Figure 1: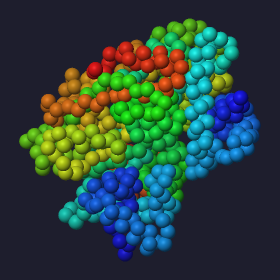
Figure 2: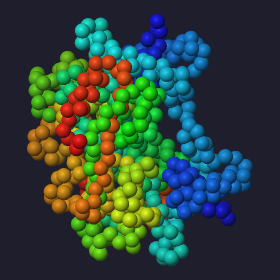
Figure 3: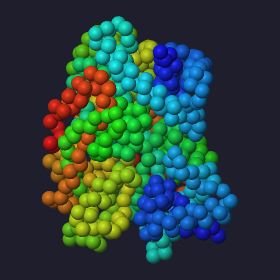
Figure 4: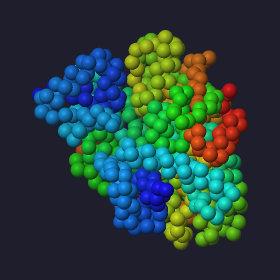
Length: 291
Length: 291
């Protein structure tokens, strides 16, 4: 069998982003961790890590990482019947879109994680990067808006999140005194999440506007709402995230009646074992999203 | 003089993360953008971009980027006296820590950006990466907790953010029925932001606990609060972010009387021109942080 001490060292170095931290996590010296990685590379006949510009796995290292994470997931199942055999503290790494994490995720998954004593290692990624990390074995599951299948994984439709184009009433009075005109949209600053965020463009195309428009970039869900509240721009915000502001009237739609529904999909390893199955069931039961 | 069309193409390709998108932003075809980059590389005698594994600037490209962004900042000053000469929509790229963006930033800077018609391009980075991007000229300013000076930049102390160790009352009753004992801390799941987040370790060292502890990782400020509210763990949360939950009693301190103060520093280009000066003044006036 493979020497899993070596694979564990690899996974820990990548998870903690360095040899010294990996040593701390494993209770080993930094040089002992390096030695394990070297041994692994000698046995494999090729490098598993690239050291610069930043520490990451080689394609061979990624395949090993994929493997060891699947094994760790399966070990969790074993731990329920043989609790003394295995370490209980392995973390499940999941790629998730920022807006889900900022809104419904914790409520949907909280009880399940408490009951199972499961620790999460969440990484925020847009759908393309999230699915790539899934293919590379770097994450065990990915929550995103793409139904594009990943080899070896299953995909479950989770429902949709509704986005509304929101701004302060003062912003609307200032920038859209005559409603959403071509001229006003060309000058009113929007807020977008990042270069891959197409929600704003889709909304504007929906109201018949296809030119370029000024925009801030704010890669934080909560920062996004705060920027809208501070009158910096209008932006597409999940309805469930702005419910309080909508009730209080501190944010209003700049185009009442218009919204965008974004579907969400849960991609998870087919051979992720019982923990992944039960987590998927827990997510299936959530009533927060619209089906 | 340098042909700024070429440098603008470089900056736009990097900002938008691709040639096609840069073309859209500049109103050019993709091949026209590629041609400009090629011309730049021929004149320079070396590459300015690395295409894989991801698009990024070479060291020479970074120096050009630094230069063109400083020029764009200076152009903003010119635009106030000669408004018809320049494009008004250049964005100011700033590296910022996630908790500031999720809490006080928009309120502190909102009016200033509105008055100046300034657009922001915010990137969330921890202090090491933020200061490196500042040195490389990729961002014009950096808000972080390190006072380490950057060559060519000034540094202003912004005050401190107070962090409290918070969880639900139910979580405290479940995991700390006898207070914070060595045994309970060894098993109670914490929430940390990411591998560089040392707040939790500092808090635990402050109460005399230095062993390892189970933890979730959640790289989202708002997700962090939601996970604490869902009973998944305890974590260090900015007091200003949890004020509503603290008043309502939905989050409580697991160690009343304990807190951590994290200083914040604003690093900005010395030759960033009047816009940067006035922005710094606006930040100086904010009363949200403790001085």
